Length: 144
Image (cartoon, rainbow, N blue to C red):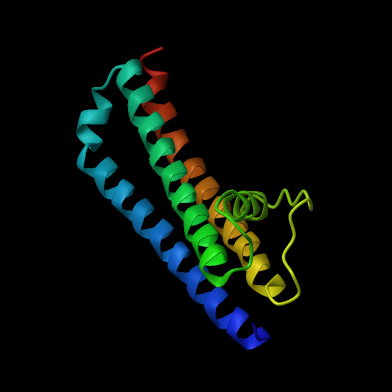
């Protein structure tokens, strides 16, 4: 696979996954804003459930990204079977990079874009949660 194709296809997946993640976060903000008044009157348990739900939805978004990258690696024939593309996508997306499964020279640039996607998406998730939890703590402050 040419470097140009790796860059174009990898960039397409990278942008697509990032847009999915942003759309999910915007959807979550809308859901939280529609329940703003309700949150103020919520119990500690209810706030726990809501915040756990937000984290769960964000984790689902990251999982979706992993499967998109794994599917692309599998379809391109970069890695055999089903387990290896999923495993490679997971350790690359999270930037753990054990190195026990590697891509050949024809797919290196493409595969490394999964790490860029993971870094960007985890940064967006962190920023989202850093903005959300102080607001929830203000609500909880009066209840504890």
